[in-house]
Image (cartoon, rainbow, N blue to C red; front, side, top):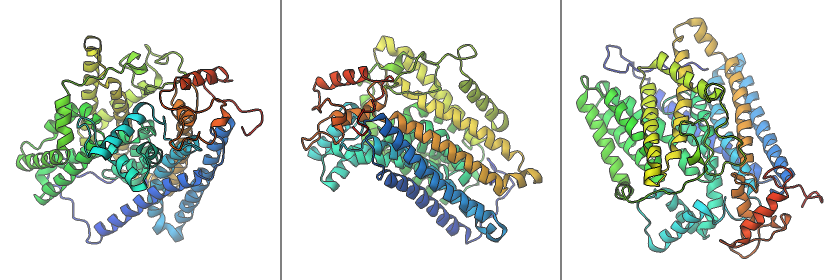
Length: 558
């Protein structure tokens, strides 16, 4: 169940992998399509069920009841899936057990992000605004979408993908771009799990795609701007697949070089157009990894062709934004100094954005020389990955990407004072943390693979009981993580992520009315840039029984 398929020899080798039988590829394609359908359907089902939870999101007790209602629905769906696994584990149905485990893993990825999206739906219940209404990046994205709809153009130095999606959805539904943000934020959040799972299925079997593709990514889900971190989760496995193909170029046919190169170029170009920031942090490491893995002696012509075709297609797809970004790189300065820019620069264990909420001492006091146990365990995972699999393409690439992003982080950080510019330096935290978590996971993956030849160990890893136990644990972990993340976005009145939803309930809607539950706060609703908005937040914060949390009205329902 947790057993791994053997990896093809990394360089030209006398070993030969026999071609799959003629029926293998069509069947594999059908199963992959089934996984995609099940994963997306599970996410959609959680969002649909969340619509039936009727609570007041501006009442803390209503928020807790809403989260509990989501957990009940999640648990019932997970229970049905686990019962299916138990039934198929019986001898009579054993032939269907692998398919059942495959679909349960796909469903788990969708249920997690659907759970978070359901919490966002509850947090925004009664308002037509998305998170943060017309303020901050939400307002900027809406303004750019208006310009795009009016003129057909937009500034070339920002990724155009999400702006085009907002404009397209606005035109399709005949709504203003600012009102398109809510459904798009919910949909983007719901798709996070399925997209992460399916991207990692390029490299891994279903259970390992869930364990290594989805679990490390849960720290990255960002409902406010879901298109940003989801592109990091997709970009990494695509680059790994590209470099693995590069390393094996000498053993690959020309058809197996050109066609995948076109696909890699298209995929990377699309990712770049949706969010390009991760390419900056990854570029140094990817260049070094490509030089290390390039088949200099066994297939340099095919390797060079793979890279040139991939690069050519990538540039053709992303040229306008790519050249716009390069033109602006010397003149545009990011001077948004926020909370994370005051944080000690080697701390990467958590990324709290610019809305950290109540944190206490930050970074949290560490047990060993100021370094926390979580960071130490992640570094042990890094060391173990190098120890057991330092010659593997995945470990080489992730280590190079981590090292390159680490150096760039300090390069930009060291220039902040002199240049009076941030240049998104804290954003590297997300990529560095993700690389460490992946390396820790792959340490376990390659450690397990070392025992593939041991019959008893292989039998134990293929046991249906192990698969069932692993899925039970994963379902519970994803349930707890989804609820915790969802709770962070529930309306609050401090400088946490919860203020994004509170702003949506305090802002007058485009039809001139206040959001449905606005009366609970007793402060009215305001237009953009109305100074009374900030005064209302301060007054509500003073009334909080616990810092930042909204009260439970004495009448019970508000």
